[in-house]
Length: 209
Image 1 (spheres, helix red, strand yellow):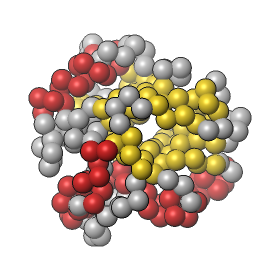
Image 2 (cartoon, one colour):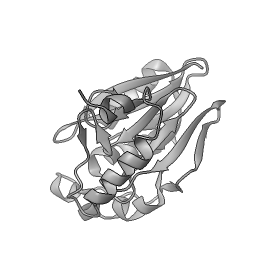
Image 3 (cartoon, rainbow, N blue to C red):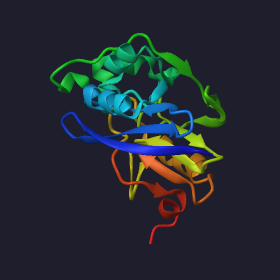
């Protein structure tokens, strides 16, 4: 497999992680959670001659969707979120952008559901499984690549931490249940790429020192 992950720190009020998941052979890939600084991310795409097929969103908070519309329109690609994220994209109260300088409202999303498989068209061996992990938000998901032993986990879990369940739609009990039942069920050497921390592994979070 020739896939690689490039983490890019972007900032809108605070730092967050956007991820490029790229096939080094075809230069095609996904952009995950472009939360801010659309021009910076577009410049990286152009400089590397990458072809982003789809923007994937782990959940609909402003710090994960802030650059979606501009990037989507500029390079003419779709963006996708869990079906439960429709309300978050449409409502600045739910996506928390009402606390930012500018409200974010997105209306052109495509939707996926629990268990869907998102395939890279240029390299069909690259498959991301959608695992629904509500708790931080009702639409929270992780994107799991079994073949490459990694997952993009948004704000469901961090290195030595978990997502805040106290925002609209959050549920602490559900969050812990999904971490234990779905994330900790993955192989312990699975690398976890989160929205706001360094990469970690299932084993490191499941069995902390």
